[in-house]
Amino acid sequence: MAGTIHVNVVSAEESIFSGEAKFVALPGEAGELGIYPRHTPLITRIRPGAVRIETADGGEEFVFVAGGILEVQPTTVTVLSDTAIRGKDLDDEKANAAKAAAEEALKSAKTDIDIAMAQSELAVMAAQLAALRKYRQKK
Image (tube, rainbow, N blue to C red; front, top):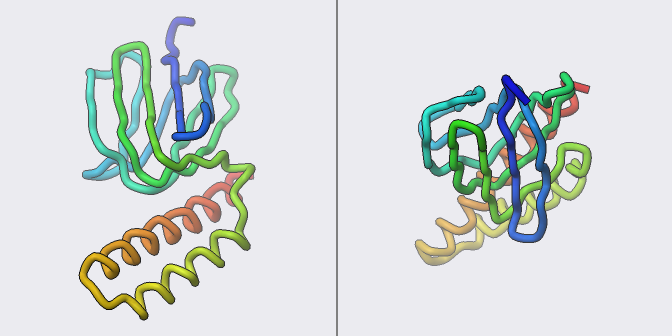
């Protein structure tokens, strides 16, 4: 379809989204990225946060990713992430429980590696909660 770009969002477990879009926004390593059809080729890391896809039919898809890799080609966008969750599947209770567990792990961490792992998990959970709030505002 003219004026669209094919988008694939894939987690380690499954394909989360595959379809045509007019626009994609996501958290790049150096800041928010906006991608339209015929974008310049690009490969970059992405931070934990929300991927917003404006579909060809005018709808909107929302996916939380816990970081990953983005590849952009003129006609295709591919988001690869270990963890990706559809906006409608985000669970406030689970995210808050995981954030509390990460905070507890940070308090009890004894080595630099444990501290770094706990901080990373805490950042992902904070990003997931922020994405959940953003998703709920859009509905």
